[in-house]
Structures are given as C-alpha cells and as structure tokens.
Image 1 (spheres, rainbow, N blue to C red):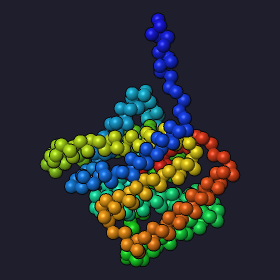
Image 2 (image 1 turned 90 degrees about the horizontal axis):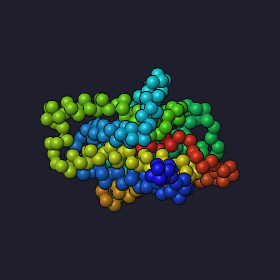
Image 3 (image 1 turned 90 degrees about the vertical axis):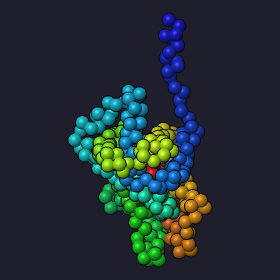
Image 4 (image 1 turned 180 degrees about the vertical axis):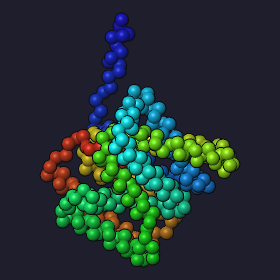
Length: 322
C-alpha cells in the first residue's frame, strides 16, 4: 500500500525552470553548430545515402519516443486529416531537401556557405512573411533586409554565381517553418509524422542500394555504420532539447541564441577545414551580419516595450535542419 501511494510523487516531475530551458536551447544549437564534425568523416558516403539513413533512423527513434510517452495518437490524428496530411507531406519534402543540400554542402567543402544559409534564414523568414502573409515591416526591418540583399548581391557579383547552397538552405527552411505555422500539431509529433511519410521512400532506396551492392551500411567500416545509425539521434536529440527549452524562455532570447549554430560552423569552416575566407567573402558576410545586428536589435527593443510571453509559438520554426 505504501509503495502504491508513493508512485504518484515519483511520477510527478519537477516544474522546469527558465534556466533549464536556456541550457536546453543552448545545447541544441551547440549540437547543430558541431554537426560538420559528424558529417565530415562520412564524406565518402553519398549525400543522398546519409540523408536517407538520417531520415529512416530519426523516424524510428522519434516514433519509439512517442510510443514510450503514449503520444502516438497525436501522429495518427495529424495524418487522419487530409489537409494536415498534405501539408506535412510538403514540409517533409522541404526538410528532406534541406537536409540533403546541407549534407552535400558540408562534405563538398562548403561549410562556410552552409553557415551563410542559416545566417540569412531569419531574414528570408521576414521576406516570406511580407510576400505570402502580407505582413508589414518597420524601417529597421526593411534596412536589415536591404543589407542582406546587398550582401548576397555582392557575393554573387564577385564570384560570378549565386550562393545557391546558402539560398537553398534558407529558402527551404523558411518555407518549412512558414507551412508548419499553420499545421496544428506538436513539434515532436509533427516530426514523427513527417519522417513517417518519407521513411518508406528512404527504406526502399536504401534496400535497393544494398541489393545492388552500392550501399555504405554494412559494406564499409563499423565506424561508418555506427555514424549512419546515429543520424537519428543527432537529428532528434537537439530537436527535443529545443522543443523543451523554447517554451520556457522568451522567444526573443531564442532568436539570439540561434546564431550560435552558424557562427560555430563558420569558425569550423575557417579554422578547422581551412576553407578560403577572402576579403571579398568577408565583405559579403559583413553586410549580412550588419543586417542581423539591426534585425536582432530591433527585436530586442520591441520586446522590451512589449513583454513577450514565456511560452512562445510552435517551436517548429527553428528545426535544423541541419
């Protein structure tokens, strides 16, 4: 009888604090920032194979987590509604494209350009809001957008080509977040539904590779096998940390912390992988950083004038993609 009476107290978790939320979000972006360290050792594996394994194992991990928490009903409910199903299938395609471009970019020696994509992503979100949601920008926001445009235009003019990796990452993730805003589903359950919709295609592709003898899993080294399997954890763990922490701290704080990831990737690209950071590239980055300073500063000023609720909107907007 005494053991039964003690069970409820053991099962009741302590109320999470803002400090715990802050640490969780910081850890999430630290993991995303270090992601090139995970991908680079698998540079011999084609990007589509890495993405397929990441998708498949992430689906298995997330669905197991939801089953353990008794939340599979949230996935079933999302997939039973036709409109939600179609939107989640579209977001699944977008996040898959984002993942494969990121993996290819890192393993092809373009870590700096992948970091650029996540630096300009917030400003792409602003533009999408103006173009598709008819939102209005104030003067500092328009100034930030102008600086970002000048930075991209400068890089394009000086190199003779669009920074397509950065733009693809920013646009695919921006559209992903925009669509997820109108899908009424929890962050983790939404990821489970998205990966569940695409996982069969990944499984068929990987099975075909194995039959053809072209698959990396089981045919290279044990280290590669472990790293391919770990892709599910590398994807799901920072997402879970972010989903937990973002609801406990002001959203303006989340907006500033998100630059940890691309900043770390930038440093890895320059100092560890020795990618060229020429004066031309530095000028383009500087224009975009100026845009971010203006944008973030305006957000902080407006946040102080009007206190932001502790519980922010759906945390899906900042899933990395990565």
